[in-house]
Length: 263
Image 1 (cartoon, rainbow, N blue to C red):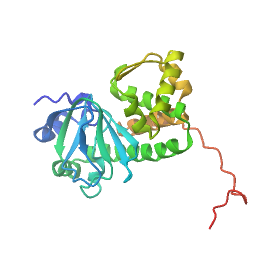
Image 2 (tube, rainbow, N blue to C red):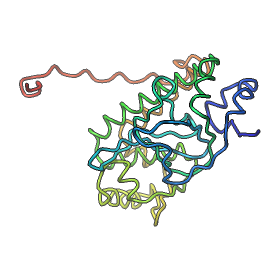
Image 3 (cartoon, rainbow, N blue to C red):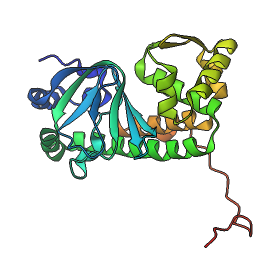
């Protein structure tokens, strides 16, 4: 069965023989906009390899507030954490950009994970990249301002969607960033005035990435650099010769009397 496996980075890394062994377990699916693949606490029966779809990983609080903690597209898979622990979802996975994917039963992927050392290596690197994304976005959501975060979020989504015209509402962007809709509407208006985007009803079109990159916080470039690092490692190449070394972080000053934690 033809799965267009080259559309997903993990599947594309497999040899024809390895892909043939997995093929009977791969089921083509179409992911709809706003479709929930699983909710927090659900049993994760299937994992998904996106081709053209983009999925948002969301932390939902009891009070109803939510924020995006990760984003997955054709570079990885959804449900990766089940390879290391119970089949219980630790977050909600919701389709942000509709499109094609293949899904595989979690128990079947675990068999391939255990028996295929190359697939095991790929998924290990992607888990590293996902954990890095979680930690980076936690800091970004806490420390950076809305204009920087909106630009960072649009750039990351643009990379994964592969198209300029994104079907998005202001409300959806606000939900993913955990901010008020009015703030997002204001920032999108500012970006449109600068020529970075065109915003209409239910859509945002990227027209000038360079402007977005200037406005974005450091997190977009950091995540892009670190993703390249993992990609070169997956291919068995020496990344230090092909990826600019990461800049050292500034040293933190020792806590003074005003910054020491209070007991």
